[in-house]
Image 1 (cartoon, protein in one colour):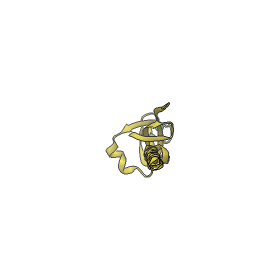
Image 2: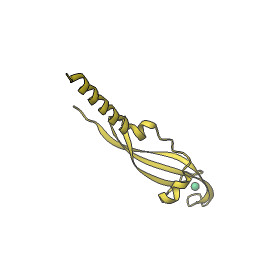
Image 3: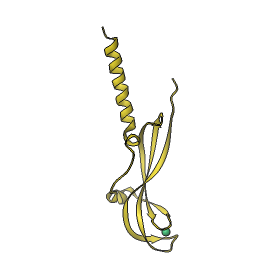
Image 4: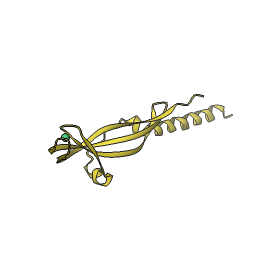
Length: 109
Ligand SMILES: [Zn+2]
Protein backbone atom coordinates (compact mmCIF):
# COMPACT_ATOMS: atom_id res chain seq x y z
CA UNK A 1 0.00 0.00 0.00
CA UNK A 2 1.40 3.36 -1.06
CA UNK A 3 1.39 5.92 1.76
CA UNK A 4 1.85 9.56 0.83
CA UNK A 5 2.54 12.24 3.43
CA UNK A 6 4.17 15.64 3.74
CA UNK A 7 3.94 19.04 5.30
CA UNK A 8 3.31 22.66 4.37
CA UNK A 9 2.53 26.10 5.65
CA UNK A 10 0.10 28.89 4.88
CA UNK A 11 -0.61 32.42 6.12
CA UNK A 12 -3.94 33.88 7.22
CA UNK A 13 -4.81 37.41 8.27
CA UNK A 14 -6.23 37.20 11.80
CA UNK A 15 -7.14 40.80 12.63
CA UNK A 16 -6.08 44.41 12.87
CA UNK A 17 -3.33 45.50 15.25
CA UNK A 18 -3.63 49.27 15.02
CA UNK A 19 -0.82 51.60 13.98
CA UNK A 20 2.86 50.82 14.53
CA UNK A 21 6.26 51.95 13.25
CA UNK A 22 7.38 50.15 10.06
CA UNK A 23 11.18 50.14 9.48
CA UNK A 24 10.75 49.73 5.71
CA UNK A 25 8.22 52.57 5.30
CA UNK A 26 10.02 54.58 8.02
CA UNK A 27 6.65 55.82 9.28
CA UNK A 28 3.65 54.88 11.42
CA UNK A 29 1.46 52.57 9.33
CA UNK A 30 -1.66 50.44 9.87
CA UNK A 31 -0.74 46.86 10.77
CA UNK A 32 -2.39 43.45 10.73
CA UNK A 33 -1.87 40.29 12.69
CA UNK A 34 -0.64 37.53 10.39
CA UNK A 35 -0.79 33.93 11.56
CA UNK A 36 1.40 31.35 9.83
CA UNK A 37 0.33 27.79 10.49
CA UNK A 38 2.35 24.69 9.71
CA UNK A 39 0.57 21.44 8.97
CA UNK A 40 1.31 17.82 8.23
CA UNK A 41 -0.85 15.66 5.98
CA UNK A 42 -1.46 12.16 4.73
CA UNK A 43 -2.83 11.79 1.17
CA UNK A 44 -3.16 15.62 0.98
CA UNK A 45 -6.59 15.45 2.68
CA UNK A 46 -6.08 14.20 6.21
CA UNK A 47 -4.06 16.96 7.80
CA UNK A 48 -3.57 18.63 11.15
CA UNK A 49 -1.95 21.81 12.42
CA UNK A 50 1.48 21.27 13.95
CA UNK A 51 2.38 24.80 15.06
CA UNK A 52 1.55 28.51 14.75
CA UNK A 53 3.76 31.57 14.26
CA UNK A 54 2.58 35.16 14.68
CA UNK A 55 3.69 38.21 12.71
CA UNK A 56 2.94 41.92 12.77
CA UNK A 57 2.49 42.88 9.12
CA UNK A 58 2.58 46.37 7.65
CA UNK A 59 -0.57 46.91 5.53
CA UNK A 60 1.28 49.33 3.24
CA UNK A 61 4.45 47.48 2.19
CA UNK A 62 3.85 43.95 3.54
CA UNK A 63 6.90 43.92 5.83
CA UNK A 64 6.30 41.40 8.62
CA UNK A 65 8.14 40.91 11.88
CA UNK A 66 7.67 38.01 14.29
CA UNK A 67 5.91 38.74 17.56
CA UNK A 68 5.46 36.66 20.69
CA UNK A 69 2.44 34.33 20.80
CA UNK A 70 1.40 35.62 24.22
CA UNK A 71 1.18 39.14 22.80
CA UNK A 72 -0.58 38.09 19.59
CA UNK A 73 -3.19 35.57 20.80
CA UNK A 74 -5.51 38.08 22.51
CA UNK A 75 -5.74 39.99 19.20
CA UNK A 76 -6.77 37.00 17.08
CA UNK A 77 -10.26 37.84 15.79
CA UNK A 78 -10.72 34.84 13.50
CA UNK A 79 -8.64 32.13 11.83
CA UNK A 80 -9.89 31.18 8.38
CA UNK A 81 -8.21 27.79 8.23
CA UNK A 82 -10.01 25.21 6.04
CA UNK A 83 -11.82 22.57 8.11
CA UNK A 84 -10.05 19.57 6.58
CA UNK A 85 -6.65 21.22 7.00
CA UNK A 86 -7.33 21.76 10.69
CA UNK A 87 -9.27 18.60 11.59
CA UNK A 88 -8.61 16.30 8.62
CA UNK A 89 -6.51 13.88 10.70
CA UNK A 90 -9.48 13.35 13.05
CA UNK A 91 -11.73 12.65 10.05
CA UNK A 92 -9.16 10.14 8.76
CA UNK A 93 -9.00 8.46 12.15
CA UNK A 94 -12.81 8.33 12.26
CA UNK A 95 -12.94 6.74 8.80
CA UNK A 96 -10.38 4.11 9.88
CA UNK A 97 -12.41 3.26 13.01
CA UNK A 98 -15.61 3.08 10.92
CA UNK A 99 -13.89 0.87 8.35
CA UNK A 100 -12.53 -1.55 10.97
CA UNK A 101 -15.91 -1.65 12.72
CA UNK A 102 -17.67 -2.50 9.45
CA UNK A 103 -15.01 -5.14 8.68
CA UNK A 104 -15.52 -6.77 12.09
CA UNK A 105 -19.32 -6.72 11.74
CA UNK A 106 -19.19 -8.19 8.23
CA UNK A 107 -16.77 -11.00 9.08
CA UNK A 108 -18.43 -11.89 12.42
CA UNK A 109 -20.46 -15.10 12.44
ZN1 LIG B 1 5.69 49.25 5.73
